[in-house]
Amino acid sequence: MVVSGERGPGIESAKGSSDKECVHEYDASHLVQRLKAESRQAPGLVMRVLKRLFLGLPAKTLEQFFFQLQTMLGSGVTIRESLHTLAGQHRGRAAKYFGEAAEQVQAGRPLSGAFAKRDYAYGRFAVAMTKAGEQSGRMDDNLRLVSKVFESFRRIRSQVITALIYPIILLHLGLVLMHLPLLFGTDGSTGAFLTAVFLKGLIPLYLLLFSLFVAHLVLRQTNFYSELILSLFVFGGVAKKTALARFSRSVASLYESGVPLGQAVNVSLEAAENGAIRNAISEATQGLQHGESFAEAIQGARHIPPMVKNMIATGEHSGSLGVTLMKVADFYEHEAETAIRRMAKIVPLVIYLAILGYFAVYIVRFWVGYYGRAL
Image 1 (cartoon, rainbow, N blue to C red):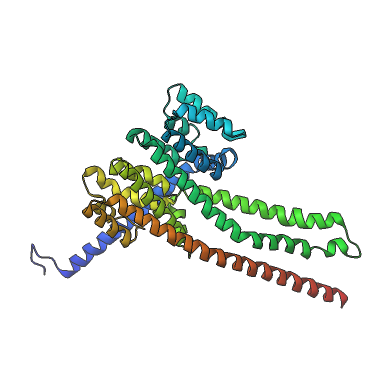
Image 2 (cartoon, rainbow, N blue to C red):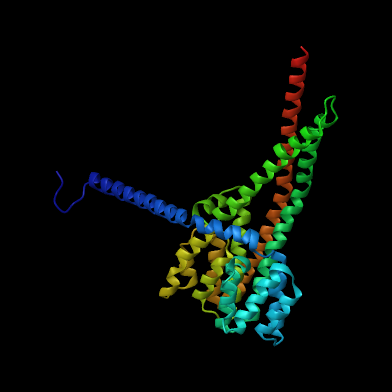
């Protein structure tokens, strides 16, 4: 018998299990709601990715554009004159977009609004940084940071592409050599050779890779896929370090330019391309609007290493938060480049082994079939 006002162990355990079940149910329902919301956004994400692929501007063009723009603004040239000058230095789509921006600025629209009209070309981060520069009066510093972000992205992409050149060449040569009997055999046919190499080999491969690339660009905006990327060996580490480096450098630059910390964090979220890290920081830093310090707010953020949290706390305590975040960005940029170089050695080796394994299976099947017919 349990006396009134006292709790027996059975009641406590039952209450604890009930609380756990409620937590699990909340987590499950929260996940389902998030997945439903992300699925409703899928058409818009697909359209944005396709616009970026077919109507966007190359990273090298944007890097040069923002570097030249901030240089001209720093020299005292007006925004309208700078845009007109840069439009005359480019051709095609870039000249059209820069000319349109110049006309909108001339009509009285702010530069961030002119960029926002074609945010798929300039990027949301560039639009947000431009708007922050207009509010803080440090436009040239913000544009310099945008140029550095595009330069960093282009450098990382170049390292990956360079590492994949030789495996791609080997793959194409392998497909050609594998189907040479169709061309030089006793009943050789050029049509059969071209059909086997292109229609049955390269074209389906190109379509598959393009579809996977588009799917990656679309899904990386979702929380579920971003969480999956972070859990991958090597690739997850590179994604996390790159996102933290860009976010830290962006916050440091904006904060040093006089932008309020809460606004600097919100703008810098666009620099962290990984959706899971962006959502984790956004949810954790809501307390900044209620007077919490950056160190207190970031303590509950997932995917943020303890070292970063400790560095932020140290920077706030010493009054040098901007300098501390710059050091964090330098550290993670170095770590990311080291991981990319390591990945550049591993990925080609995996591709080589996969290609050799495929060729080995093909050769074995060919000779087994040949001797089978001979017998």
